[in-house]
Image 1 (spheres, one colour):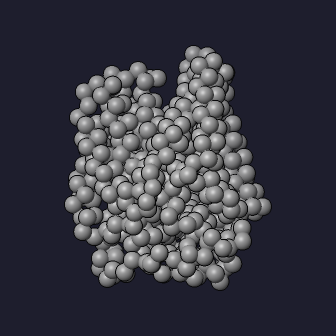
Image 2 (image 1 turned 45 degrees about the horizontal axis):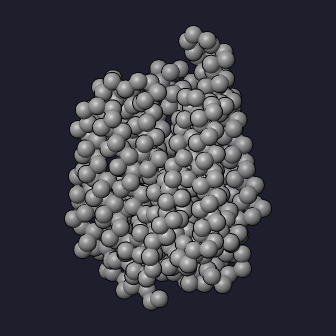
Image 3 (image 1 turned 90 degrees about the vertical axis):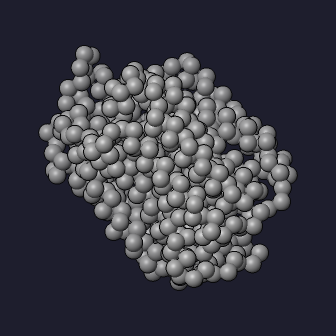
Length: 485
């Protein structure tokens, strides 16, 4: 399939800005609400358990429908899927911003997740349609850094907006951004070629319900524990449905998720690490945001701004990651990032009630930010540079599905460890010592996840040699099917 004509530099910059803005808007919503949750609970009368569903409803819909969204882009056209998804997300953001009761807000957040699932997979695929040669590599670097920084930026922006305005503007800010994307994208973003076929409805149904069940069960463990019978039944049902999904995909003429995506070592390692890395980073954020407010007494604004070292570290490495890739190759670059990630998580194993921000939190945040800039670009390249263009939407959907699942899994596992340890130390009210003890145990698990990702990278990940990394990304895309894995 021939490459689309290269647009002039001015249009290329605007095209990249439109795609990245859409992706940033979608990704921010996985974290931007966290700092605002206490005010939302007070404003709408949420119970402590019910408040978690402000986040979980979004994650469930987003993670459960991503594969369907990726396939929709392949068949209907990625720009069309992107625009429809952004329109749904923008309308849902308006509905959520004016919500008058808990049920209204939770339903609107789920609709936001559905819109994000339709638009999200097409963003990465649209880069391969609109950019070629060296520009494609630079565009992918910008996209990857924005994706990684969204987690940190969400916390910072959530704190700023909640303090300066109110929690409703955390949602309403999406409306003008979404409208601007909808206005500019039809003119400045080229449509991808459509691929003939039909929807794999059986696969879409089993994958969506299976992922929803698994994520729902993992989210439920925070309140009910891993031994809760209802949780175990839901988790088992989700696993069974995913097994049925795999069996359907093996026989489907046009599967929603081609199992060949997992055949290569580079892609298999990339997908696995995209599951493990968010388990570390989202769990890290979940615990640290509580430590800052419960132990150090930070306000929401100060707690959000406290994540600036993470954003700065990410900015430093994301801007140089493509050059590091060209000189040293993807495997050493990803391994260096994972060493920094493990060091940051390991440092926090020493956290205590007497730990100060600059004495024990600032440093780990900086290390985690530096790590992400080196990790995300090689992972995306390991997957997207070896996938057939006709499956680009599906591959992008799988990448984002694993990222969202990893985020939910990391929060569930670390919160369960933290809660069980802290509760065992204080039956009435959590002391600072009990909170710190639970967090230390949680960060041990984070360190294990990071080390596991590092071992997988060293043992399994296979990327082109350093000199091949400098070749145009489009050349690697076309050669990916023939490269030994």
